[in-house]
Length: 584
Image 1: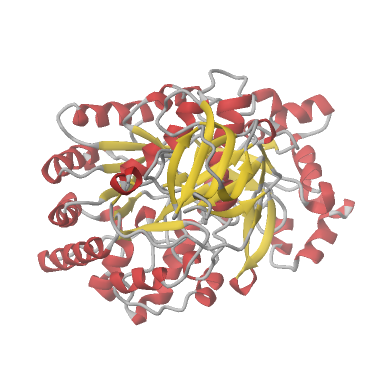
Image 2: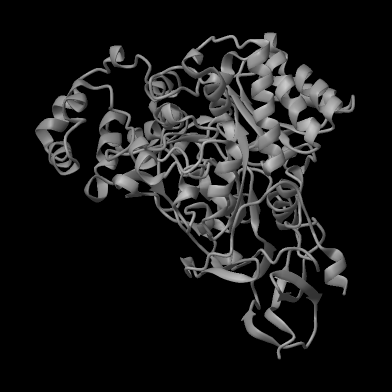
């Protein structure tokens, strides 16, 4: 009998620790890494990784697959980008606990906050759960290509306890807060990896109402955090506008010191945040210097929206002519948009700002818009564009108005052109501010929002962007080393959530691995698919350069294509590597 199930031969191993890369073999047996080095043992299967890099599987701690994970085994698009572990239930939105009469409310909350089609969620989910432990059981019943873990989401907890009383500004009683804390405690004991909430005006339900956590008091949040403290593990995750009067860092620091548990938050340059990013980091570090454990989740590129005519937003959405055709089937819309007479009429119009109302994307376009901050997504687009690449600059160079240039490029490829508008993390017109944070132990690479914002972004490709842009191609400033990049996307993210059985290539750790041709790594062009339940739409983006992805010793993706294998499952609570078994 062969000594091992699989050997990856002769690859350049980047082991996730941050230490220097080396050439060697990785042997796998029983779903674990059995040996690393150079050896002659035989295996049932071998992969020749000569000239390729071998990394741990990527651990993405900020996704929103809460509905999709109940029906989809492939778990795209994150699984297309080397992710073998995804943590969902972020930002206080999710589907458990779920009283039978609150299903539509929870769907509306998720649709509004994360732009996941409500029709897809309604058709795709079976709702064969009510409590949070029952939801975990439902997740466990479906094998998939990756592992998933989840938070207990504040919005669902509040809705379950308050029922119809859950309205913006609702003030729970002391008994309500205790019930919420009990639900969170039960959820964490059953295997949740933490608790999440959202406190930003950018997060609203489909009806335009702010999410439940926005108006929660620090007393409510601390009591819920203490519930995790009683269990002894769990991460408190939050998105917040960081209003100074809320003293978010003060109470997070106190909670972390009291419970010994980490708190983590979305750290961004944001039009909604009262505190600039530099101040957020400084306040976090002041608390950490006093014994707290607060970790900033940072994005690797400008968070924005991808605009096109079909199925998503576009820069002309507030023009009366577009409003008149916005509800037509796509083929009829396209015929109008490609009609020179329609184009001339639309370009002669002004935006009708009365249409903004509760339209957050429309409001953002008003605040952040202007052709100087919108960029043509050509085949070599790198997500760190310069001012001379803007629509305004290219239009001037072409001798046409910016309006006409943008209209024409959206009409390319039969109406499938794209424009990129960075909203967050691009205030300076570059990503230089992220360089130092890439070498900080109090930050992790995150905020991919995998599975969410289906009609506006596809940041689930963040791990690929990290390799292509930050490690290999960046020209507008410093790069980051391959070793550091892999450490941040593997060990660091795993360690934050207590997943100490993955993220490192060493004996005893899970055999979650990527074999990557770094020279060929490239993000593909986004496209709009209608492949969710009920024909729901989503923007997708694939990548070149992934030779294979391995989950628990099983090849799940080969040359970018899913093999159909489903070795992934549900993570319940903290994990550790079985180093003793490996040594034996």
